[in-house]
Image 1: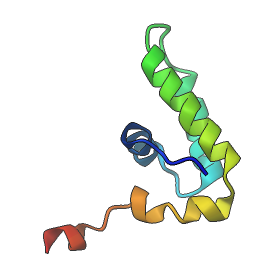
Image 2 (image 1 turned 90 degrees about the horizontal axis):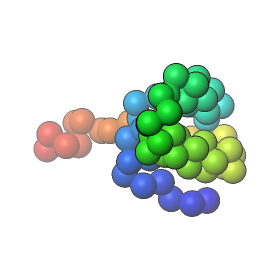
Image 3 (image 1 turned 60 degrees about the horizontal axis):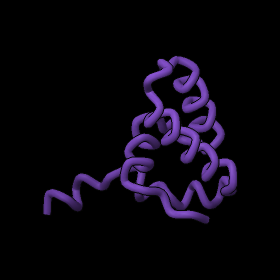
Image 4 (image 1 turned 60 degrees about the vertical axis):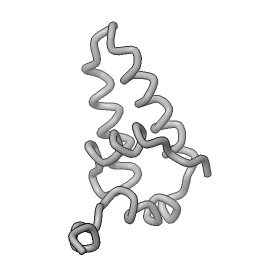
Length: 76
């Protein structure tokens, strides 16, 4: 599995639905509303979608530590 960049992870956090397929659907819905000049966001969305499609639900579940910050740990 390819690693996600910081920008990709941020996008995933913003649109995360709790499931891999839900996130793919949310990104597809969002990308349908992009303006023609939003090429950078469109490419970022394509990259994330490609990586998510290539992984399994189990692999996605392993990303939960990345997508859901542990605020208690950060306070310490």
